Every structure is written in structure tokens, then in C-alpha cells.
Amino acid sequence: MPLPGFSGRALLFALATAAPLAAQSHRLGTITFPNSGPRAAQRPFIRGVLLLHSFEYADAAEAFRKAQRVAPGFALAYWGEAMTRTHPVWNEQDADSARAILARLAPTPEARSARAGTPRERGYLEAVELLYGDGSKPRRDTLYSAAMGRLAAAYPSDLEARAFYALSLLGLSQGTRNVPAYMRAGALAEDVLRRNPDHPGAAHYIIHAFDDPAHAPLGLPAARAYSKIAPGASHAQHMTSHIFVALGMWDETVDANLAALGPNRPAWTPNHVSAWLDYAYLQQGRTAEARRLLENVRGNLGNPPRRYARLFLQTMRAHYLVASERWADSSVAWEVDTTGTGPVPQAMDAFALGYAALRRGDRAAADEGLRRLGVLAARPPAADDDDDNPQVVTILETELRGALRAADGRADEAMTLLREAAAVEDTMAVAFGPPDVVKPPHELLGELLLAQGKPAAAQQEFVRALTLAPRRAASLLGLARAATAAGDAPVADQARADLRAIWHPADQDLPGLAEIARPSAQAR
Image 1 (cartoon, rainbow, N blue to C red):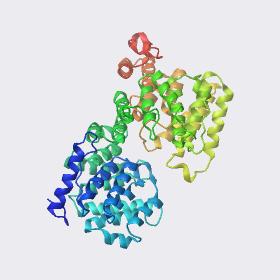
Image 2 (spheres, rainbow, N blue to C red; image 1 turned 90 degrees about the vertical axis):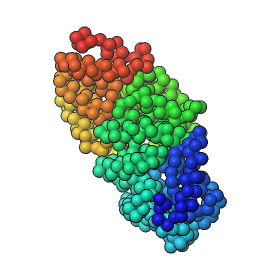
Image 3 (cartoon, helix red, strand yellow; image 1 turned 60 degrees about the vertical axis):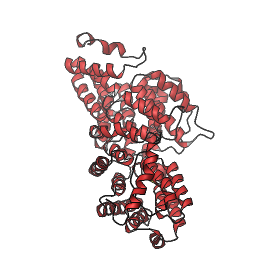
Image 4 (spheres, one colour; image 1 turned 180 degrees about the vertical axis):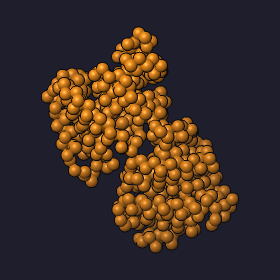
């Protein structure tokens, strides 16, 4: 039935404008968003909302501007463009730009509200006014979320209000994972998806709500669905890998990010698609493919080098060095400008270069890596750090110090430091995607315990590491070795079987391939 305040004709028209768009080969999903705008503005408006749900912000803003050109007084077209200036999951917001967009509709909130065609549309405008009103970002986000909750309750048939309310809950914790809020958001989005199985926002927000190892199985159906709902959105193709990485589904992660890169397979994209693809290649044992992608990214930094391109080069090189264990790889000599890239990517870079230097016997370079980490750890937070977690820097600095102590024969001190790092990691909210802590401390601790002849204790650490990062190759290999040495053949055999499945496309010269092929009795 029509939503309150709308005629049956308006509802039917909204459905009619959405259906042809959904039928296109590069479809974005299907939504119902009745509104008082003129017929000629409906197609770009609906397209803008669909793109907004898939975080295709630039294209969404252009679609909303097209609707404005058709209908300069269409209030929701300005609401939509203003909404492209806030990115809740990424903790990004350009309030000044959004206020300027709203001012093009009318100079004051009261005047803008008067341009809304119905009470429901006024509800959307009132919510966005709170989002970009006075006060700090956390306060404005909270007020906006409460307003969207009221709007969703007032119009229970409005799936858009319900979907945007779910998204607002994901943004309340300012870029970190507040599990209760995330679970509420996931439940709301699941309700939307049940009522409209072709809703891109519902599938998208379910994935964000559940993209940690503990909850990822709940998001797997949405991940399977989202790429088919919105094949025309690159982000929808990548987004499925949030669940796949959390579950250690490396083949699916590779396929998802190759699809997100598109048929031309550009070497670098402005988002993190290449970084996630490279990490998945490394888990699959496709070290040569990962190295080629890393080289391609280096060759496409831009002139001058783009900030985010440099950031991804730092993080990708860090993961490459640690996962491949090619400690003397020529990439260690690359000069990468770290200016403005934030403390976490700089710390990942410093740790990986320092740890690689330690492993190849270059103590001076290892000490330099520790010095860099110490400077980053002592640095006070800056306004441009985005949502970088200072605990990551602390963990990496502590880990490298521990590794250096172990190299000096001070095993007890090393163990204490690595346990400190692991304890800090255990207090952190679970993050999604390739780990910022480029060498998970439980994994490193397990390796040290195994080297000390304590396989049972090492086995426990590898199990913990795999709880936080399922099917991570290095942790599985460590578990197989520790369980074998401890005489736990069933666990060792299962770890080897898991690795054989993961490494089915691996390079033939990958270290460890022959080892996992042996039965437990022969592997000890």
C-alpha cells in the first residue's frame, strides 16, 4: 500500500522508474522511494540513491545534481547530494561541502523544510540538517541516527528510512566496531533484505555489520547476493570480500577483487581493491603474482604521487615482505614518501622493513625500523590521522623490540614483550580486511615458542591467531609444525589439509609445499 502522504500514482511511478534501471546489464539493484519530485527527475534521483547505497559517492552526487537540474526545487535531490558527503563506516565527513549543497536549495533550514513536498520528506531533511548542524561530529552523528530511527518508526513501509537508519548505526562508533550497534544495524538491514531481496543497501550494510571472524557466517548469504544485486557498482564486487577475508575464503576474495577492478584490470585503484587482492594472492601462495601487482602499483603512483597510492604501496609492501619471507627482496630498497599517510601505514612499513632486515642479518636497518616505530609511538595524535588506531603502532613497536631481544638471546624478555603485544591486540575491537598488525603477535609468539622447543604452548598461540584471522597461511603452517612436534597428529593433519586446499594455485617453488604434503608421522 502507498506510504502515508503519497498517492498510488506516485508510488507506481517510483516503481516504474526503478524497474527499467534494474533491468540494465550494469544494474544497481531495485528500490522503492516515493517522493513528490516531478516525473522527469525520478530516474536520476533513484539512480543516485542506488549508487549512494553502494558507496559510489562521486557518481551518486552527479546523479543527484542531474535531478536538481531537471527540478531545481526538488528538495530530496539536495538531500541526496548532501548525503554523499558523509561516509559513516569510514568515519569520513565533509560537513562544509554538505552545508553548501543544502544552501543551494534554500539559505536556512526553515526555508529548506518548506520546500519539502510531504511530512515524510521533511523528516529526511530534518535528519540531514542534524547531521550537518552544530556541534562535534560524534554528537551530530548521534542526533542524525536518532532522527532516522524516528523516521523509520513513523513510516514502517519506508525501507529507505530503515536502511539509512541501519547505516547510521554503523557510524556511531566513529570508525571502530561497536558490536551491539553493529548487530542492531545488521538486524535492521536483514529485515530490509527480506522485504526487498534486490535492495543493494540492505545487502551492503549486512556485510559491514558482520565482517569480523566471529559474525562473518551471518553475512555470507548477503555477500553471495550483493555482487549479483549491483553488478554495475565496483564497490559491490569488492565488498563481498569483506566476508570472504573474515572467513579465510581466499579464492573468493581474489575473484571478488578481480571483478571489482573490471575487465581492464587497472594496476591501481583509488580504493583498497588492489591491496586486498594482493593479500589474498599471498595467502594462496601466489607470491610471484603478488610481486607483479606490487610492482604495477609502484609504477602507477601518479605524478605527483597520490597520497592514497603511496599509502597502499606501503601497506602492500609490508604484507608482501612478511608473508613471502623474501627478506632480501629488492622492494626493501624502494624509497616511498610517507608524508601525510598516517601513523598506521608508516608503522606497518617501518615494522616490515625492520623485521625483514633482522631476518636477513642487517642489524643496523633493523634498529632503524625500531627507531622509526618509537617516534611514531611517541607522536601525539593529529587531526589528520583519520581513524588510525594508535594501538596498532604500539603493538608493532613492541613486536619488533621483542624480535630484536630474541635475536640477542634474551628469550625471556622477548617472550614478555610479545605477550604484551598479544594482550593489547586482544583488547582491540576486531577490524575488517587484511590486518594492520602486519605480523599478528600470537603468530609471532607461536613461532618464538616453537623455536624454544615449547610446541604445546606454541600450538595454543597459533590457534588463537587463527581465531582472529581464520585460515591465515602462516598461522596454519605454524599450527601444523607445532602440533606435529607436540604429537597432536589430528590437529597437524587438519592444518596441512587446510593449507593444501588454500595453496592449490600456489607457486611450485613456494616454501612449505613439500612439508604439508607429508603425513604427520613423517613430518616430525
